[in-house]
Amino acid sequence: MPTGTGGEATAMKQLGANDPRSAGRHRLLAVIGQGAMGRVLLGRAPDGRLVAVKMVHRHLARSPEFRERFRMEVQASQRVTGAYTAAVMDADPDAPEPWLASTYVPGPSLREAVEQSGPLPLGGLRLLTAGLAAALLEIHRAGMIHRDLKPANVLLGAEGPRVIDFGIARALETRTQLTSTGSPIGSPAFMSPEQAGGDELTTASDVFSVGGMLVLAASGQNPFTGASAPQTLYNVVHARADTGAVPAALRTVVDACLAKNPAHRPTAEQLLGAVEAVSARAAWPSEVQRAIARDAAEAQRWDESDGQPSEPAGGRRWWVIAAAIVTVVGVVGAGVFALTHGRSAAPDPLAHRTLAISDDQLRTVDTCRLLGADVIGSLGQPAQPVLTNSSVCSAKVTLSGGRQPTMTVGVGVAAPDVVRTADSLADQPVLDTRAGNRACGRAVRAGAQSKVAIEFTVADADGDSCAPAMAGLKSALTRLVTNSPTASLSRQSVVRVDPCASVDSSVIGAAVGSGVSASAIDVHTCQWQGTGLGMKLQTTETARLDNNPKYQQVGIGGEIQLAPHQAARLVDADGTCSTYLMVQPTTGDRGETIAAIAHPVTPASSGKACGATESVIGSVLERLGYT
Image (cartoon, rainbow, N blue to C red; front, side):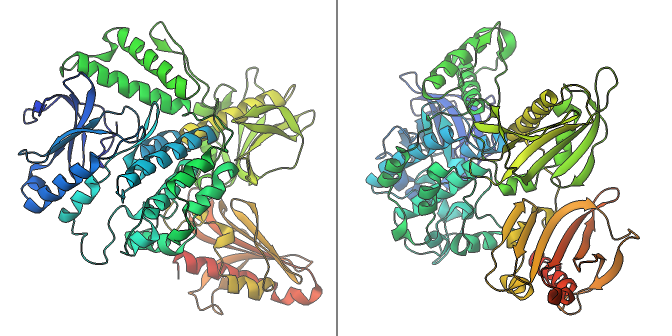
């Protein structure tokens, strides 16, 4: 349940012994949560409407400066109206515990929705974009700049997104020592470049923040987050956000929102106009609709019990309440689920979803967990999965009758250019990637514009192998979009990095020639094809080669002024030099590996192939901070 004050989402709780029972004319019913500025309580207005009452902490209220700033911001916030802001209904900045009551909006915050359910489909992105643009129109018309637009301050309600905490975030500044000249104020990951630099702000600053939130909503990743707050601020000012996961229908306007120059960003009105061209029906995915229904039903329960704890499972009527709420949500969204006999029919998690999984997300997937019994158990009993590399994992699966086909899942693998089947999953056509009497494969691209895919193959099977391949793909894809298994990776993990962006351009230029463009093969592999030498780079977890007798053990690093690293090398008859550096062991006989393979195009280039691989590996190590 969003608190609106930066607190973590929790279920509502009974009021404590020290909690007030009223705020002005509002009857207080339950505790929603708390954050740095105060508590958020569920209340009932005199007209019966439910409100979210934000009570300021007493230690903050003792500051005359804070109280005055709070009073000014309450007055400003009350000027904001509109369907996409949580309207301020009442406030008392002079109370012993200053408070503000706004419309209660059941539903998760954008942050919670993405963390719990993954990226939004195109229909959800359209609804989010239109709602945020409309909210900015009202905020800016009131002569205000929000200055703290972030996923925790956007609630996904039944009728669309609601922006909260405008103005209040600024009142907090006096107690967080962020008001000194030149100090940035707000949430670093979603600041504008001018805000990060402490410059004077215009309404364009809020538009930049909206652009960052839309990237998060489309990809699941914060666009500028670094290892530290200073690194994040540096990224905001200097780095280009990766908008590859944003659907093509919205990518141009999102790129414009993220322009470093405020003058090049669209206005809120222009942003709203751009959304009208999107053809997808504006709707929250079913997971968000269910969260809205749960929150509304719980608030209704506390309201009807007048703040006394009651068991939601004590009768069928709470399911009836939830069912009615979901029906209302379905008017705005899609995927309304039926409730019968007090239980919900399980919806298809891929229904009404537009697939958009970013390369960064795919790189961190624990691929072998997609072959666990909890994912593909309906197909048979899987044996211990065997990792090929971070993208590919296989397992023998025992079927009824004792047959044991091999099932393989690929995550972020190169998207095949093959025949489409008549099936589709998450608005993506299903591709026929392998056919034969005893083998079949099915795949979908990770997004409409994605160059990589999720693939599931069944080999060594007797009888129909395409039906289990399709079933396996759907099971793996469902897990990816609902609760993606994330690998445990260190900050310096080579598996995390984008291989095409992990090598200094001067190093690549010296190896294969200047002006050669990078070409991604899959999420862990990149190649550069020069006229004299071709270079391929892989950053992945794979079987260790540093103890394989087929490979020569070599020390690299001398010429590139790095500490020597022990690597394994294989030189083919045609002069192709493959150098594998095991950066760190993981489990069993596996390790995180940087592999550079140089293929001479001309005989004259053979002599420089191995040196080029060392330079490329050294550049990756340097960027990862291993030097």
